[in-house]
Length: 301
Image (cartoon, rainbow, N blue to C red; front, side):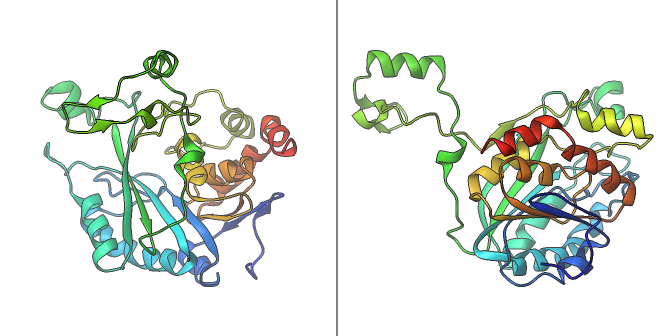
């Protein structure tokens, strides 16, 4: 798909080293089914991987967004994990991620398919000044995840992300439920009692982000490489890959970091492209594809 040589390849994917705007511009129109990414956040304090200031974030992100829109197919999706930020020096919040969402819809012409929220129960009580020292705020444990699309009808199926029924629902399925009008005004019909293979998940995703003993971390330590400091768990891209794509579809992550998205795509038999500007992060991401479990699962399909 690209003329330039990838930094590495797997059975299903290719990882490229370089500026994502330059590389995305070499990809053809309507060539990917899903852009799944977690770009640098607009934080007040700079991180080692580089991040724009929240005041400049929308302007910085717009060229990337226009390329993403060009690249996704008509029924494709763009999913952006974007954490919040505090204003520097005072205990109030930036609105940058909401300004970005409005701009992506009103100026770039994308549609908000659905807003998701990732609850990180193990998040540290930060910023320490306001949360742990002065005790005037609570810890920030939720990331916004914007699911955007080129049209109002992106490809998706919630049947692919069903969750196990709760104990109460299993009991109702076994004992039966009398149809009646609920206090909310909804009338629960007999169809409610059908076993459809699982519960439809909410748009609140609870996933811990406290990875501590993965093959990736161990291998980075043995090789003397610093792991990427802001990895999201594989469950996040897995959820949206399942929701919005089919096997052999193309998944792109232009801010790949340690390439969690590529790992998730490979695991689920999707073709993928990852782009990362830092060589050390991309070098470490290779270890994700050495994990025996990943290839055992892939070869079993």
